[in-house]
Amino acid sequence: MRIALLIFPLLVFSLLFSCSDMKSAKSDQETSVSSKDNADSVETDTMESNRNHLHVSSQNSKSLNYKFLVPAHYHYINPGRMIDSSWVEIYQKGKKFYRAKAQYTLKRRWSDYIGDTANVLYGKRKAFLFVNHLPTKLGEIEAANLNFDEYITLRPNEVCSFMFGGKRYNLEIKKEKKKDDSVPFTCFTLLNGKQIAKRTKVFEAAFELLFAGDIDGDGKLDLVIDFRSDTGEFKVVLFLSSCALPGQPVQQVGEIDDQYDC
Image (cartoon, rainbow, N blue to C red; front, side):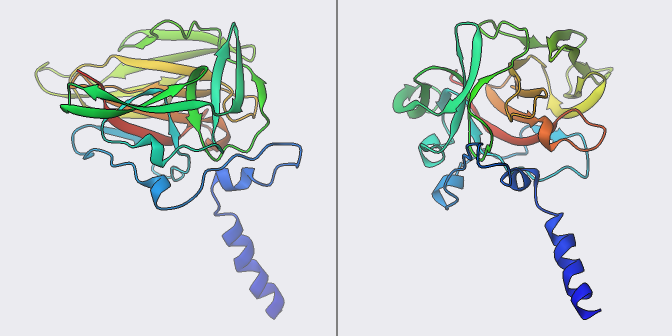
């Protein structure tokens, strides 16, 4: 009886691990990729969150466990303190997409926005995303039938419709109705009618879909969306299907908060 009482709390504790921890138990045939977990790797110097707000769709959402970056200029984030050779990237070659070990270059470039040099992350290939802690097979992946060479804008009352895995997906932005256009509003992001995020304190919604495809290797749709603001801020969010709550298609697992060049 005492043994049973000791074992039961351990079983309950084990169920509380995040989805990314559970993935680490995959077979030896899969390549596990995780970044070094030290103080430098998590120091991102993000801006104050009270300027603009992004919320996941559920109060019971899982914690943000993934660190990721996109090729860009960074004014507040130091990508060199995050990314290393253990990360993977999602990149395009011709009409095909691949998950592979990250190949990147870090440089300093002048930024008129801050009046100083800024950190710039370049992909050596045509990369869309760099991510750590992604235990999955490397190689070719499936992507949505979209042209990611073009700017894929997500605006209120417009539907971005595409195919993935033989299924039709509709990604849309719903704007909260306001009588006065001079005040900020709230907008909701829906995937096939399911709310996956909401953005508050927005004056103009012109977001961008950066990538849609199987990032985490479970054969289901994942998304990378830039919930940029009209003030120059970009807030890139990673959504993974393998971390989705019951009844939800995807779940937010990480975000980047920084500024574009003016």
